[in-house]
Amino acid sequence: MFSDQDIRQAAKVCVLGKTVVDNLFPGGENPVGRVVRFGKIPMTVIGVLESKGTNSMGMDQDDVVLAPYTTVMKRILAIDYIQGIYASAVDEDATDRVIDDITALLRQRHRLGENADDDFEIRSQQEMSEMMHSTSDMMTVLLACIAGISLLVGGIGIMNIMYVSVTERTREIGLRMAIGARGADILSQFLIEAVIISVTGGVIGIAAGLVASWLVNAIARWPVSIQLYPVVLSFVVCTATGVFFGWYPARKASGLDPIEAIRYE
Image 1: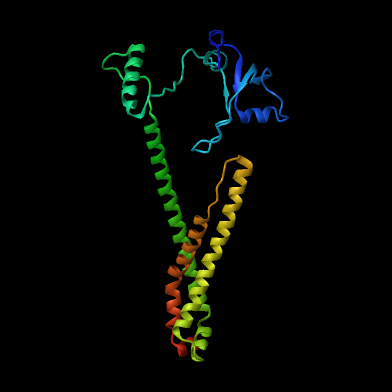
Image 2 (image 1 turned 30 degrees about the vertical axis):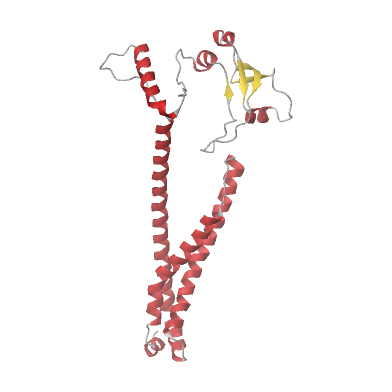
């Protein structure tokens, strides 16, 4: 897209991505031939890139401005070397051989001795993918630990609330059992209360998550996808948490002696 003359002269020309065009020329006018400024440097627009959308990381690939590398080096970064090169192998099987060839060529061009360390770094797409997967797995484990601690703290809170409820309603429990309520009835009553407490917290959390997702999409313009599976899973986890941590207080309530419970003050 740039001529040899543009590169030799470090010409002040550029090519814009679709997002940049939409932001700078919202009226729909043709940006080719117009002048935009990068800081204080005027750049003449000579073309517009085709829209590519977002990548796998959710980054907008159209939010980009391209210029000759000599222009960037001399007029913007004020350096005399290239910071990075993207290379493509003819096929995936040739990747390792290409890396070895590039390494040997760069060591020769940089005049590195046989025992000298490389003063450059080469990364393949496979290494980048492995690093991304490793980071993703680590973040998943971290979030799982945070979620587990949150569930534990919330469950202990439910258990404490149910203990207080059983203590304050001991006479009520005794009265109910005296007029015919079975232990299973008392057990189910307190289990239902524990589940309602935990599910209510889950509903509040889901609502807060939906609002936060909407704010992220509205303010940061990050694409957000809300699926049904996490919502259903959260309800199941909330219910299981209520049953698990509410079982012992409910069991204690169902095992009270009616006479002793009625006498309790």
